[in-house]
Image 1 (tube, one colour):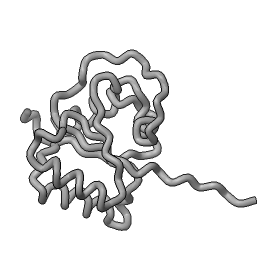
Image 2 (spheres, one colour):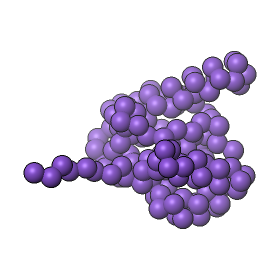
Image 3 (cartoon, helix red, strand yellow):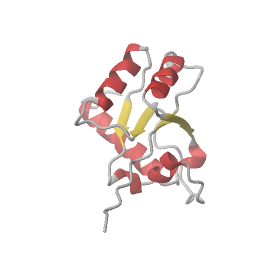
Length: 134
């Protein structure tokens, strides 16, 4: 029997970062070059599961509280850090001028979290690494 290995969907979830922001057009071109589908997410998605959002599934979302952060976030699925692909993508996005303080890759653990929970964790980690600076 062959083992079935499913690849992570290649996507980038964008929170609080859209076409009006500096660097968006470059980010969109870079995502396309890396085979990533951009998906804008908003408050209606906070109760949705990250893995479902990346896969484009439209399951009913659990009710969500208020937005956990006003900071922009980029959550990437389907690129690998061990071969340098994720790093090259993020570096190119930065070169294009996009200011996205919260960045993460989808992991086997975080893919089961709600978007709201992941954003809250990223925001908390950002505060801790910034030494409490906003």
